[in-house]
Image (cartoon, rainbow, N blue to C red; front, side, top):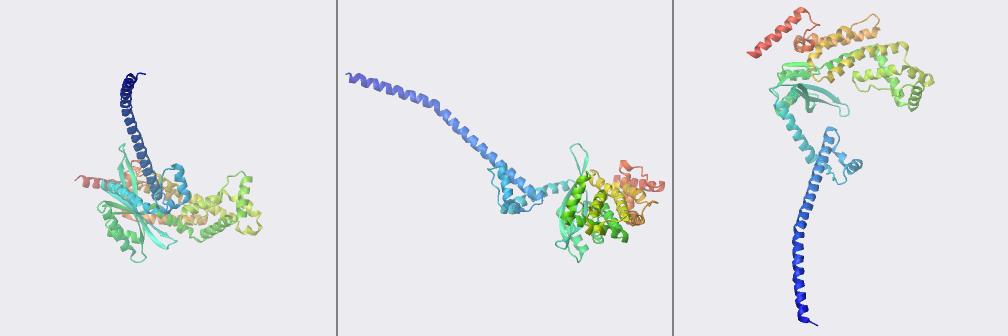
Length: 437
């Protein structure tokens, strides 16, 4: 009825609505923009987290391969992939080529730089060589390790060891090859002027190489000397026969399912802990000792099994053979304790050699009236090897005495005569004066 007034009313309302919408939009716009920024920040944070997590998992896989001595092909194993998916479903495992061409080489470079810095910060170091043979490849190798002291956070000294290289040693020109490769390693790791001593297996080729390289101190490895002397004792006719019989007995139980079942049943009947017999297939005296100890522990249970096994009565050891087994265990046990003590020591071990040798030669290897004849002969053989290696070499003997004198634990040198003690003290004073001058 009033068209003009209605148009004015609509026009005014439209302008008011526009102003209202504009005001509302102006209030909403900053909040909307802030929300977008927050969303982007969250996405970026999640992305950074995923990248960091991915790098950590990849680094862990590289460490597993390198430190666990696993082949790179482990990354192709379905079960390994499943393990990683369980740990983090979002993680994508790189391919084997990445680990072989990038991941592992970069890890080597990083570790090498750390070791190189450690060696650069030390004015001197010692080395040790370990020669071993791969029976599967029928080749000989030498592993070279370096040993040095570092200062901890508390100011105390600590021993550190690093394996620098393992290299093949050809059958011909062995000494010359060892000399050349050792020199190249010294140059590569910048220790050619820092090596002050070497611990070796006392083999003629390694000893010659150390002489050609002018390494001042060449110390025979105590563990290798133990092994050499004990293995010689094992070759004595009666001991060799007893050990052969022990190996046949152990082999029978390990290869016969029936015998193993009967052994387990007898152990259960006698309330004894379940355990298998131990083979000494490794050519190391410690494995032979482990075999003999287990046989001694299970002697009566083994006898009970063989009594019921009429086809294998001949494997049972005679009473005198069991006595020999017991004698060998008693003889070798102190050597095991010495080896474990030296291996576990966190301090320089050179000062411990002379006191331990004195203890072994004067107690463990001293022949007693109730010793079996073959045990007495074994003691003589081992004592001869230890004496020939350490006591009959004046340079080595003097060096060990000085090292022991400098250790507060053994400073009084109770195993030396008064004259020998005075010689050691004079030697130390002379070296101290030469350093001060």
